[in-house]
Image (cartoon, rainbow, N blue to C red; front, side, top):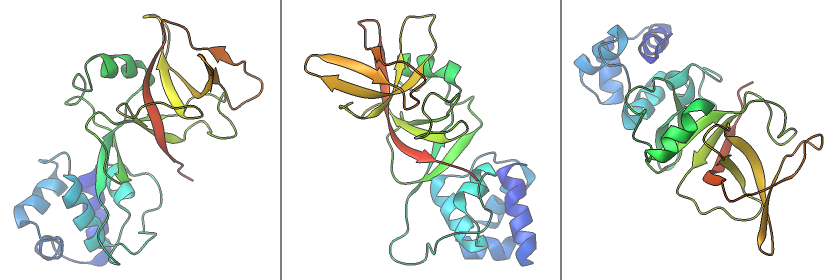
Length: 210
């Protein structure tokens, strides 16, 4: 189901018309129509928040279909939070994203994650794969990665190595002049950071869908 279909579903749940939704969200009637009929594939972050508030649904559910449908916090209280739509990469896309400074796949990425907060243009999301970071992170968790944050000891980081190696997700340990990659799962070994390894980003957030 697309975000436009979710807008229509939530609107019909409230039994309001497209013009009424447009009025509540302070957008044009044509914008609502284009979202619902699929002419506009993607909502801008500010529109996403406004529509989610108008329909009393979660921005994350509206954008991605994941998580609870109903809004779990009152976003009317205080200042409105900033909602960002973060590109969701596959692990195979990480190297290219790093080498092109986030420009290579932008137009082709359909999946995005709605996250409350402000993030840089190169920030991306990944789904955790495997069990090497359990119990801190479980397979299927969504992590938000900031390539512009300077990695420090005990940060969780995404690392790429030789051109043929897959990206890896570990905790960075710093001891004097040596750096190591530590898995959270004790069944896996600590690895030294070698000269051919590059830290492509620091994990700044974890999201879990139940």
